[in-house]
Length: 548
Ligand code: AMP
Image (cartoon, rainbow, N blue to C red; front, side, top):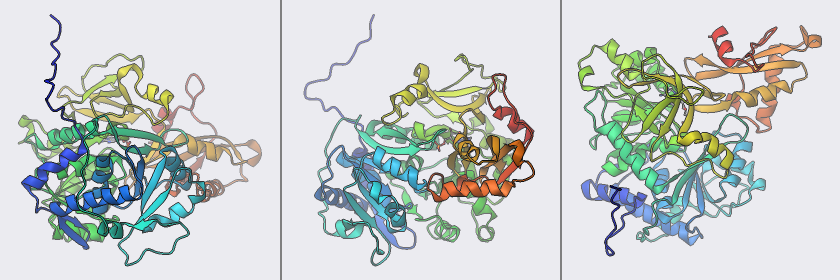
């Protein structure tokens, strides 16, 4: 017998999985539910729908067509949420720009993504002014601001967001189109040089929304989310669509609170005033919040926080639990939309004591439905799930990027053998929980942002006194990791050059816009030799052992 493929009835509607359909249900289920922006704006889902239509009309008026790329540079705001919907729903592509990129990386991503329009918060106008002479495709700039009038700028501004919304009609007939249409794109700063663009279709984002729903809402666990929750993101919306949670919460008709720029006082105020019950962030942010004196004065016992982007340590987990915060780990990456795993509890773990639960909460997690996750050894063979054998995490799921934008070679490497290679190393225990233990990609994650260790090595090697250099990520309580450089000096410079001199030399590359400031190592040590592998490559594994 062969499979029996279904032949559709001629008149049957071929229902596309497109973002506009995510927006239907909340308008029936909870149209009066609120969307809040800081202490400034509060409106209902009905208004959200109207403003999305108005934004689409405004963008159409300035010439945005299907297939065009429209970029956004903003803090986490209700306006950003409107862009998450209006831009892809028109059939255009939303480019969420990482506001922490260096000027060189910023202009590269703008030109590479072929941005036609940029919607920019007035706070970031100076960043665009610095690169405007290198724009290749940008035709219009729209400014978003909370100020009464936007600040002076040398850029040509083609409109102000609120004014454009005010002047536009509140009905827009969002079309149906192929679910494989590109909806979003953004850049990840990888191991070498320039950022790499990943891209996601409507179908992928819709399926990812269901993936989040099953991973976060379906199981009776210590941690679960539903439509009664109040959501506030603490992972920037430019970073993998704030992990896709705004799409999930909109689909569920949840109250949503957008904090704008992350300021501890405003965050605490919003959690209390708006009764926020669920957020997500990197460990650095939760560390900052629970260490702030303000946090000690408030009752955070209704707050659930999904921790991802880096491993959650047991110490931080315990500290947060002591303050009443219910937290759990999740794992994913830019290339994977991002969700892969959530550290949900299994039924028999629900009455475990705190210590055993901490161990589960800090695991990288169980793959969510429709994620197939395996571990491969360097020869590409699967390793057993025995809680000790380690291998590279490789995945399959319907929502993984199909490659890197305009880079077939790197796309093939990413997808070698039909599995997306994460570059992360881990083991899977007999209960099926993944634990990430290391990384094969040569990058350092500091405060949730990447810096390439190879790039730093390249910069430091250009100092006249440097003979050899290796850069690794050092564990750091606050930032997760910080770059740490080992340098072998040339004979003639020994005793004549200081560590500081070399670090100051790195600052020149920050001033030139080549690397962001957080990329400069805060520690550099002179050594006699640097550990090498048998084939003479710098042995980072060994160095990490020497400098734990
Ligand atoms: P990004 O593409 O910036 O979202 O970074 C994704 C990478 O962050 C992954 O490949 C991992 O190296 C790391 N990562 C994300 N979540 C976790 C986690 N829960 N535990 C350990 N590492 C993580």
